[in-house]
Length: 89
Image (cartoon, rainbow, N blue to C red; front, side):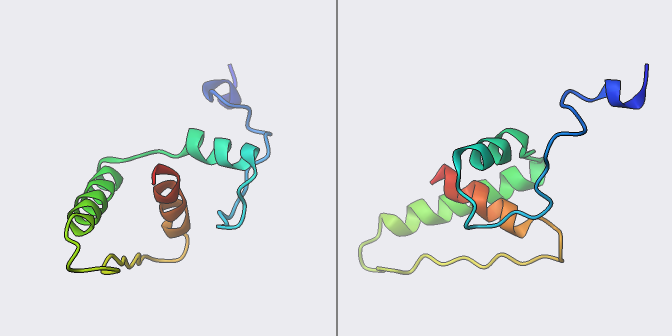
């Protein structure tokens, strides 16, 4: 057995090293969703976002109030998180 045998997917497949917001072809979307790993921390952030978003949508007295700020170090997954969030919406 070799190390590559331990992996479910072929190691020589095409992997996009940088997630870009303007890449929305079906193959890219499918791969991003299929390979996105939702950790406990990410699940908490998704829940926090949708709880806040749904609360603000229910209150017509505060139009256009929903805004988010995503911060993190270079390469920490900000764009990937935002893209996954947009797919869920």
